[in-house]
Length: 323
Image 1 (tube, one colour):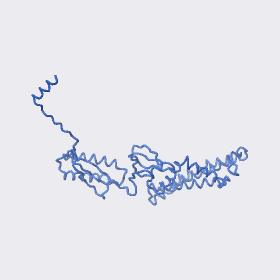
Image 2 (tube, helix red, strand yellow):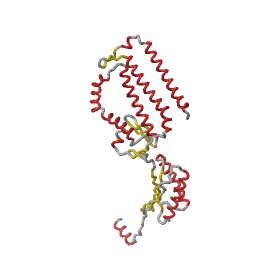
Image 3 (cartoon, one colour):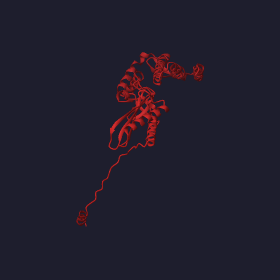
Image 4 (cartoon, rainbow, N blue to C red):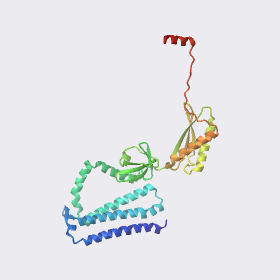
């Protein structure tokens, strides 16, 4: 997409937003002579806070919020594409940039309305005590979220397994991480969970994943022919799917002698962890079809029932004893 095509929606959004807030600023100046606009609501230190000061602070913060979103949505994406950054790293940069801009905007809004930051030291002390007791979980999850963004044990786009549930990381927010399952359900997990509990990340560093397809054949089957058919299945699937890698090569493992079958495993390596279910289903269909075409039986568990005939004299004695 050309630069002009990227900048146009960003400029249009910014102009629309600035027009709206310009009208609000005009209304503020229009009522600048009204006493109720500057009436003291409360005080922080020596600063008397009025409705006018609150509105100015809100305008500064909302302007920073809107501006940071425009930059992350329209300005940063071409830079990411130029340097071929992955989805998780893009999300990290966006969130860190957003937090920095909002902190700066908050500080500027306070100083703009005349509030001395040193006057907030008492409030900060009270807030620290509150965090230490009633807000420790929130603080823990917030700090954990920052660690996740910088250390990146998980990142947006990763496929993870949490409590035996498979899902993709959608967002890493200030307090919680959003996971979208394969059933399109969303799990909201506290950020601290990913630092304290065991989480399987299928996309961490190396996205290659080994897919194991177990299959059993009847006793008496030609095991060499079975191995050849499984290799053929892997080659046929590889021709139709770019997800199956040439290296490492597919491998057929003769697992052992089961109670009712000769057990095999077909190993194939995938480049995309998110295609596991699709590839597994396709390989199972292909194995079943190939075995049927070549008269290879896939057995099922069986139990043999042996019936023994009873001697006639013994049967008569039983009848006499149980009339």
